[in-house]
Length: 325
Image 1 (cartoon, rainbow, N blue to C red):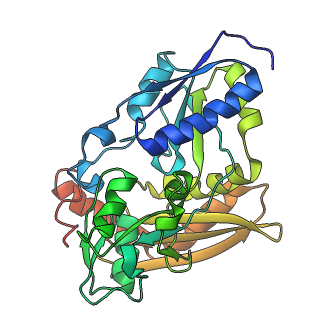
Image 2 (tube, helix red, strand yellow):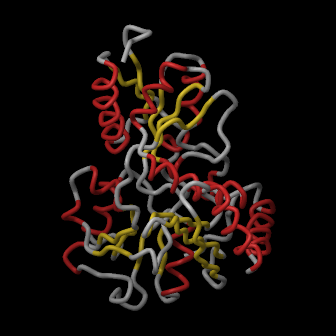
């Protein structure tokens, strides 16, 4: 590819996983362009607040906003994110231009030598998660468990289970596998048991909307099937106005040439769980996403989400008081 600049700079968070993802994109971009690529580490709000559950922090773009400020200021040429961290509404002038091939989107459990799964965890066991989506689905399956909020990087959260601070933690397979720690996973949770987060397992490459050079690079980075699946999932999230504070899940994939999506909405306490599946065509993921939204709304999703948001508003825009144990 003919270069229109001398070098490129990627904006990234500084966690081990973020750096792995950014170095992966760095290698791909260097191979496509022949240009040297630097990494610029940028600390986000989500990186600075580690002792408070994400649902209590509030706001959107906890792990992306500061990177986008630098992108729009042209101090970086592209930003690399975990897709599940990217809000469905981007700042004006920014666009997700590529999603490389997705890896395993499933949730997993890490529990040390005991090797628990959701069925074999002892009565009253402590299960760590910082996700309202996971909390809701776990409590529906195992209301006897004590749910403990855990924050920090992947290794920190896994060690909490491996060293006995909690009996197990639930995390995303993708990050653990990318870090080379798959041998520490003790159980893979099927999407039938737990609908994954929207975009889980996918990497997002964000650029300035008017950057034609980077758009050309991203066209070569993109994996069409992943882009189609994530597009359908993000329609569900965007239309239902979901985020870290709302238990919403979406998982799309291609099966025998059809585009299939599972959708989930639940109450924080797990007493109300809505799930459905819709099938469409890969050439119209947006319509399939809207079909899933319509089905969830028919099942009562609007009422569940309104109750969660009302409680959040009463708590100053956060979900304080809903988290419990």
